[in-house]
Image 1: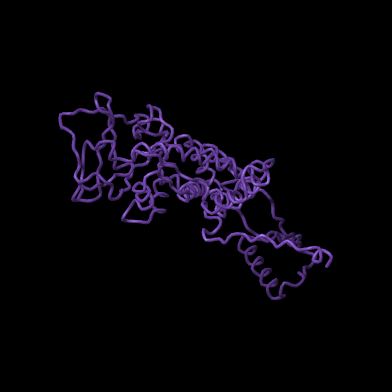
Image 2 (image 1 turned 120 degrees about the vertical axis):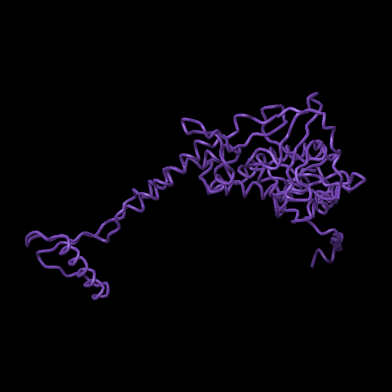
Length: 381
């Protein structure tokens, strides 16, 4: 088992927790800006957006300048596959603004595997002299338990927006507290309205014949329905004392269901993507290519935070190539290369080399055969 390099117990550290993010159960107004990630994922728009963004980021390909680092990034964990590990890391990053993983190393300091850590397991602290961060981690393994003063070099700590110089991250969900509260209240109102709505095929009026009590009205309604079923959905026959008016379907329920659609646009805005990602209307003036470019820019904002942390901790350049995510078939990339050949920027053999390196063309593709030039007789024929 890898050995922890514990610091001197006399070394003191300062807490860097954000007091405003702590739940205040004694708030007399009963309000709080805290939004639990598990609660947020019950919102269909939040779940859809987090799933798509984390999946596309995990679909990207890490490119490292060191072969050992490349192997670690391709197989970071022993308890799951690489895609599931990275999607879990990126989903937590999008939900909480930061994510953690501990680097288990052998006696030579070489990474053996990484362990995903929930934010509730990790408490970061600033060294008193300001020279770095240390972490207290509560591991799930009983044999490890609570470990204090873990140096920052042993932790993968990816952050998004920060208010303390990049030491910790801010959850994007904190900006959605009002929207999610409104969406929850709107859903509750819609369910209540649908449950209490009256569903009837029509109204049967008794024109003459005196007043009927409730029991007699219910009996006449049942007999009327029996008459309709007995006639095999044929024409309804009534006498002069009755009048039947079928009800028309109104759009009130549809308007009630659509009144909270703006919350989806607000959720997409917080994460910097178009609401078309969560099946919204999006920008009607933009083409598919423009929306694809905007989505790629949105992914690159998150990818830059990931690249910076991994490059810093792994002491080498690491890039998250998003091309497999935004262009899974490679047709857009091949079209760009083709246009560069037509403009003279690339030669045909250079274009073939680039497409082979990208995996769009097979590496053992045979060379193109030039057509034989015919003589004068062939031209006449």
